[in-house]
Image 1 (tube, rainbow, N blue to C red):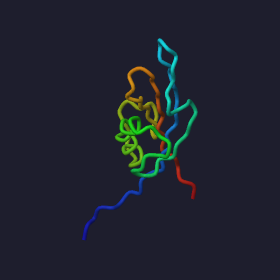
Image 2 (tube, rainbow, N blue to C red):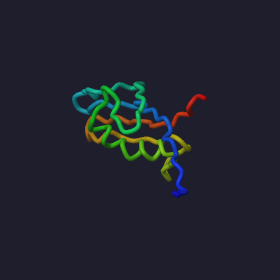
Image 3 (cartoon, rainbow, N blue to C red):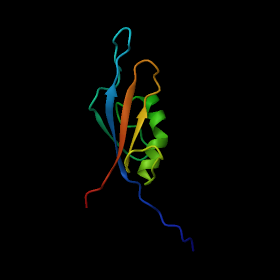
Image 4 (cartoon, rainbow, N blue to C red):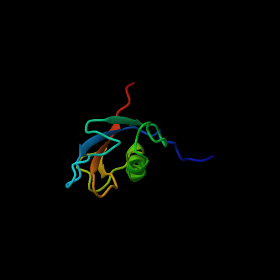
Length: 101
């Protein structure tokens, strides 16, 4: 019999931390606004979430939902990831959320 145990993924939330406008024309992100919160449902891109940004967040989402931590994270259960758009920058905060019993 296999001795490996299955660890249920943690619930993870994505928060839009900062949206910096284009330095020359002032345009902001067409998909997100500061303060938006999205629930991550284990492998599914949240509804109305930018696919390009989600692709960048995916590795960090998986680390946090499986209980891991990056060496650069300031605190456990929380990490920061930037959108890949080099002009209109959006920063996301990913947080592992404690499940309510």
